Image (cartoon, rainbow, N blue to C red; front, side, top):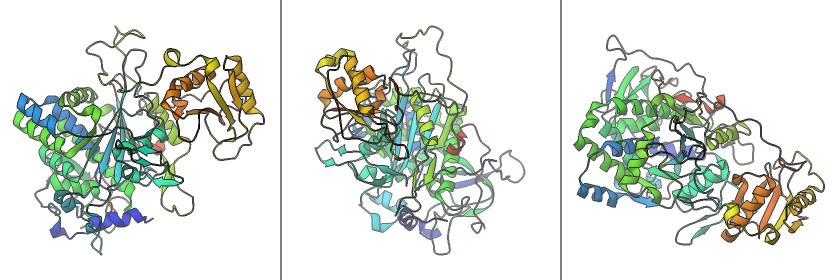
Length: 573
């Protein structure tokens, strides 16, 4: 079993005696053992799936509480004063502190707009309640980590939802992030662990890191902490989970979450739910991957329970839930009003659990010096997953729903059609705002060797592409002697004033809009001719997109109520 430095801090948080962890025993108030069929002893079940090669994260799967809060707000009835009170309680932060914002999700041919929300779980211990729940006294009031990061993609036609989680110890190049007050966090010169992104100005830098890696436009983020999970778990009244054997998450030296459950199905809530979501020692092989499986099981079960729980028809109960959710969350400024959260909740509720697919970004262990136990995106398969999200392809292989019969390509969506959440910013349109081609200065660099350096650069390639642009009326083009290394061709520009001109260059060369990026590493508009464009007048088109998530993403369907956690040897009672 690999042990990473991040695990040391984590297990320090978990190393509390049973008596110090409320709800820790099998008969504690937080758990209610129950049978699946109402008769006979509860049976254990195996999911039947092989362990995925993904890496999990520590801490709780907080996106569940975020989605739950949206569902609550979508049905709660509150008076005007209470509405104002909730509005005043919403905590906000900047959406994207990076330079590559992509302009938000774009409508499809039927006028329907997909929606991407980054769900962030912070391990902040900045108040007494979070400190009591999180432990690890040496981290009190220290900088938080974004230990849970999950991108929720709601399809344009609202027929399906995809969730892509990133392992907490994924190593990335961090983009430049600029705080609203002007503080600048320069782009990293080396790989940085992804959960440290939040320390570079806040959740907006975590969004920027995702945008830089995936090229997926992110429309919103929602962030929640320890106490938020406990409050929401209490409010819903319990979530059924299953273990194949009696389990007690406690090592001989006192580490572990303290979770103690009997074999079969139990209904958990409050701090016992938090223990479940934080358990590593005791599930599967005792690594973070087992914790991820447990978090996904809880998430699916919670969604199903919420939809059928009659108690939530009580307006007083709903208002209480809404209050708890609002107090626990930080959202971007585009979600700063109850009516915006209401509209968003209505969209999320359209997807049945059977069309919710949860996945983990395919990964590989890093082979770079000093990064033992850390991971990096798996070449090819991680990009396949990101591409499916970018192109609004359902991860479950079932495709999208059929657009409304009245919808015609190019027509705006009807009032009842999905997609009220339009992008708050719009990418520059070359035709409307760019200068004439003859007035746009462009530099072209030969980057055809690719990032891995395995292919030789194509001699004279920069001059060939420069000639293409000249033939299209761009007379201020220079083939640079300086080279680069890019797998895919990209156009970078230095200032906002050059954005539309850069988009015009992309259009002229047949490059996608996502290839246009703002960067402080260039002085003007620079075309990097990548490994994907070694010959010819247009880049080599990519292969057809996958129609189903790769096996390495370990997809889990929201209707799967048979999942049951395997128990690590030595952690039974």
